[in-house]
Length: 567
Image 1 (cartoon, rainbow, N blue to C red):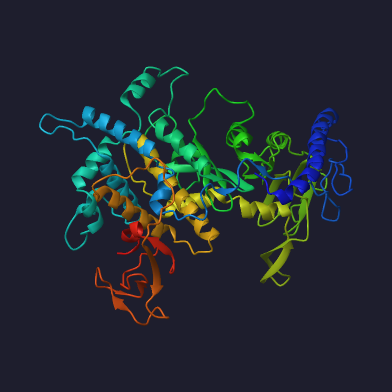
Image 2: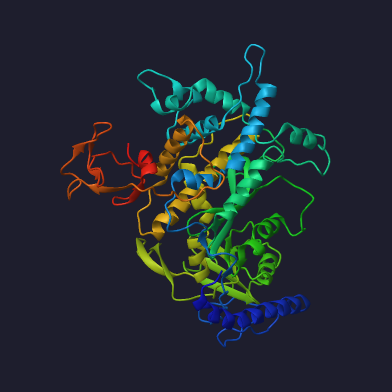
């Protein structure tokens, strides 16, 4: 998708991109023949590229590479009707679809009949209402923490939590948890027969939910220009062959996921589980294979700016991404193959803070920048230096700490702004994550997939409200609303059709929320339902009703949603 106003500019810049890519190919060949001392020129702003045999300072000018023409496959943002009203439940159903829940229900009942049934107490099949109630309590456990699962159904003065008791009994919930299974018995048996062969699938027990969740994340959103790739650790003590240990990480033991996220909001657009060392590698390193697997231009499009850390960055990868019309920036390790080996005019040990050294080889820009420690970056997007500054505390001649503006390369500045896409997603998941200890490794992934679905649905909710000029609810309020709506599906008599989730259809009777008086603290009345003091009423029926903060004041609410809006 591409705006009509930008097509002429993109067509004009496409010739520059072709010249830059073709020039990078020729320079790569000439540098390999001459030992890295090519003196070719690059098209930019009419300035020739300096020699690639020494580091340069800010007093020497650098070219400005042509910026990529952004051509995504779809319109960036939420793939929804932006003028429609979606409830929290409807957004959640975009990820946990009816087909996914039916597969989960069928496989869990099959496992329960085989493993949980006894002559004295035969297995009773789980219904769809039971599954809604189970998910409701799981999400509730994310923002109301107890040390034991049974504490949620304990009575007395210290506990006595009303919500789990109103959904289902603790015995029934634990029975569903024990029988929870993501794959069928036939698939597990067929996969187990292949153990020890290359055809054996290590992720066979999570494959149905795993693949559906990846497809749902890509289907309901398209990332904007700035994207980031990073790893994510999911804590687990289950002893399986692909569990990882990462020293120095907050989660040391667990499962590793590689994630591509939108840098603007942290939306998890694509991910995959690292299965350990396999035979399907390119020979260019794990970081290279991860990036090429997640950056599928047939799904993404071209012109993206990709940010990554030094685990993935390599000159070979950046040049191959340029051939696919994806521009990249990231920190780099000095021992990477292709990193300049010259030390001529490199950063001195006693260079002051803010000193910049740069070197350009074809389309690749290498940067050394002195901060609290030396920072090394590689980029195909940026120029070496500009007038940008950053405030740091430095010692003056008298030994006192003072604030000072020091130069910062554009690559460092934009890297700090855009690299945190996956970190934002991890933080949103970590605030109210539903994960708790389990002996079954596949249940750990079930909890994490549920967190991904809730967080992505919350981000879509923010996109919808922002597009309408409204203030969105916070994540905790979104999870509370979602838990209540799932509970209502559990307690009502029939299950609505969920195969085509969409915007709520307003009925003939419309309810509009408004203040009782001009000021929120004045004119409060008792709610007609619970008797608590409230500041809002319905303008249609003039009844004072408690307000759940999932809609703004003045929002139109359909009659079918009145039970969800008013309590």
